[in-house]
Length: 386
Image (cartoon, rainbow, N blue to C red; front, side):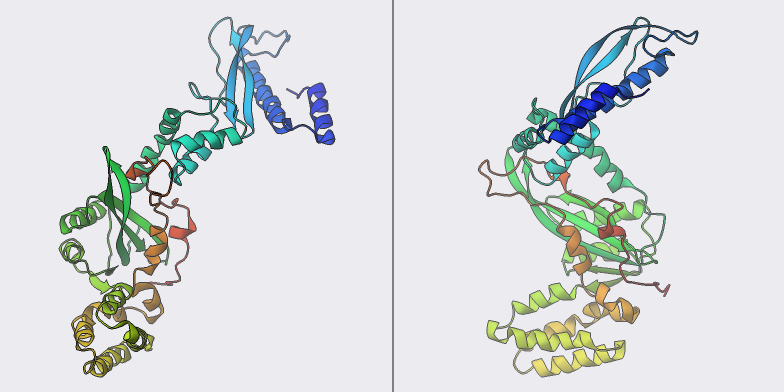
């Protein structure tokens, strides 16, 4: 079915004049209406005023339907039939907002725009009828299914030799109160060097029981082949790793370790001590790394005995990476590869006039499964089976 030549001519004149702000909206209305008419003709078996034996019924007027799009509100006419019913496939029952605008609303909500301000955003897009807070909440309810699918997917499609674990805290509403919630995140590296977010969980605190339950859920979903776990020295986490991920070595994050060192030395000596410790990680092979650590311990012992003791006691934990290929060392001696994922988790903004946003903590932002943040090559190369 061809588009009306007169309607197209009017749109072309408006575009040439450059004075109409509704050209895009009118063009969308024209195309959508034509698609509806074409689908109706196929359902009826004949176009308007067409005589054919294939006709199954006749038109019986039309009803209007207001569709809100990113180009603005569009009024469409849906044909009614004498026998049977017809509803176009490009529309959805009981929904006046098209999928594109639906996605915009969800994206804005997830990134921290309050439900009250989403209405302003929609109005700025040219939607005269606006959108209520309850409608925003209803739209974003679809995210529950997306997050549940992501969190419950199987991990048995490959093995993950390296697993990174970390936690961050956010403010969230718990009933009428705003409380701090712990979000624990696990990412893994496959044998081909791809990174993948394995899972996340929300709890009141990151105690040992919480970490144990989280790691068991990963194992239940198929996590296997773990050779090294990288994390900080949280006691509950260490115990959970030892109890659940049997046979995996543990690498203490060197960044967290250096932060702990900073708390035990005078500020004026911080740069000197850290520079000395960093020389440990600049060595070319495992034997040199171990020898350099012992040498640094001896040098620090006279002036900084506490730091020397910390280094000596943590030697096995902070040098676990040396049992793996040298080309992997920079990627596995700290949890830095996980920090970028943590930044995707929004924290509620207390600077807003209306106070903390009323967004449940379940709306944590997770990278899309096809995002480069989790599936891009991580420069690990081939991972040894050792």
